[in-house]
Length: 190
Image 1 (cartoon, rainbow, N blue to C red):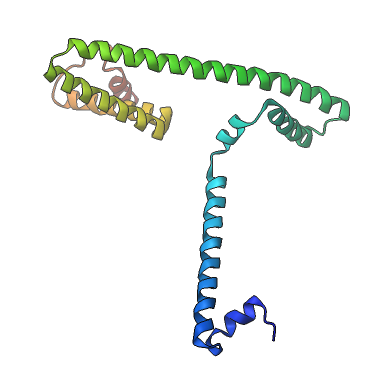
Image 2 (image 1 turned 135 degrees about the vertical axis):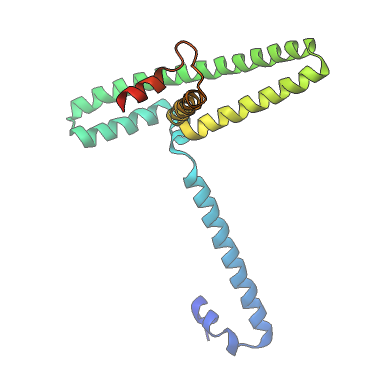
């Protein structure tokens, strides 16, 4: 008697004890395999789209851009060819610029590290501790800016400045020249 996989699963309890464990192993292996494949598929699709675009070659970029424009603008065959050529030309230039920026960033990091090591050679052990703390705080600040975005960070700074000016006003202190403008504008608008 030849049974399909699903029939075997449903008939597990009717099979002898020895075959029950074989089926259990097969089923467990299948579940693990399917789970592993689904996780690898999910990880591949969770890769940011920008990274995928950045890794593409100029021809792929130009083709994708031309296809999008063809759909949106209903280009003729002649227009499509010309648009593709332009997209290809600019994609090649963008890749050159991106590579130059990578090299420039690497040089900047190298210069920063060199400067940092020279500065640390001049500091006392106590100053070095404070310098490390300062670097750590700046790193956190940069991560926060990256997380919140520059717009969110600027809004936060403006709110903090407004609160500082409000506290100064409540305590009878006058802000330094140029400092109290935000608070003054708020008071005039009321």
